[in-house]
Image 1 (cartoon, rainbow, N blue to C red):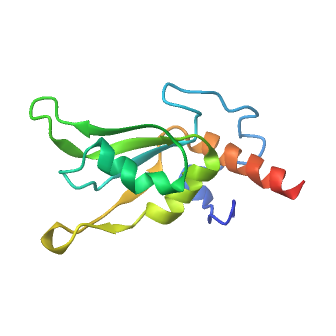
Image 2: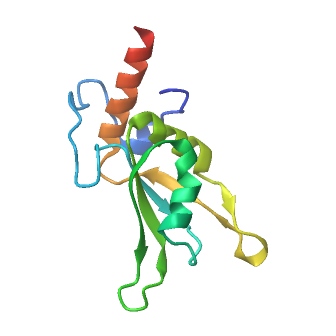
Length: 134
C-alpha cells in the first residue's frame, strides 16, 4: 500500500526498490509519473470540462482531450498531468470509476497512470512515504 492506495504488483509489473528509478526526470508534459490517461469521457467534453473535473485534486500542469483530426470531435479520452505525485494519486482515488452524465448518457470514467510511466509514479509515491516517515 502506497499513501493509502492499494498497490497491486501485477497491475504495474513487479517493481521492487532496486528496480525503481532513483531520480524522476521531466517529460514532455511534466514530471514522469504524474501523467494520467482518462477514458470513457463523454464525447461532448472539451479541455475545460476535463480540467473542471480534475482541478480539485491538485495543480494541473497540462491537460488535453484527444480529438478526431477530421471531425474535430472528442474521441472519448484525454490526458491530465499534475504538478506532483500526491495530486496524481488523489485523482486516481477520487475519479477512477466515477459515474458522469445521466440517463442513457451515463458513463463510468476510467483513470490510470499513462502507459510507460508506472515505475516513475511508484518511485514518486515511495518517496512521499519516506518523507512522511521522517
